[in-house]
Length: 212
Figure 1: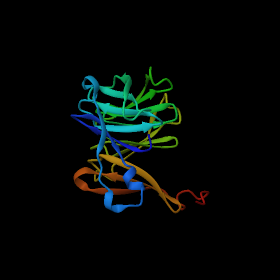
Figure 2: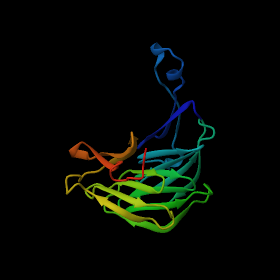
Figure 3: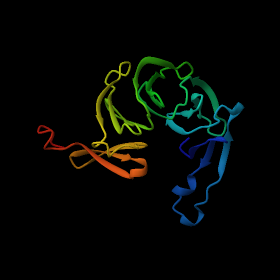
């Protein structure tokens, strides 16, 4: 599985590409070719996002999240479908899949990938886009609502911890990544028409007992 990149395409579904050429030390042969294409029965029509967890791929589509087994990368097979309408993106942490849709953030128990369970607890949001998980928090790029930080310490009962829109200046949030620099934590937000926004989440002077 580590020889391949998995790419979603709204028309063709899942495209599998061998990327070994990037690791052989020879820059002159860095040309990629697809190894397989899979969209059995059109199940991945409209695919928008993919995340891998082990040998399982979670692909968001307008009809929901499709769980695909890629243990054999050249012969994917559908394991199950998660009925979340217009699913946009997802992220996995331990036994749980967190999914965004136009109505909010949903949580799915994926302990059994063949029989995932959508949990009743969800967070209503008007325009949830991408989501990033970091320990007990989910960071949601929520369009015009800005950056929403969700407490997921109890995955079956997520709750909004904080909403941040920089006094209305962060109003087209599309994606977010969280990372550390020295002793501080930052959220890097793709804010659509406004470009890249950097939000400082923690710093030594705001957390006196944190030493980096």
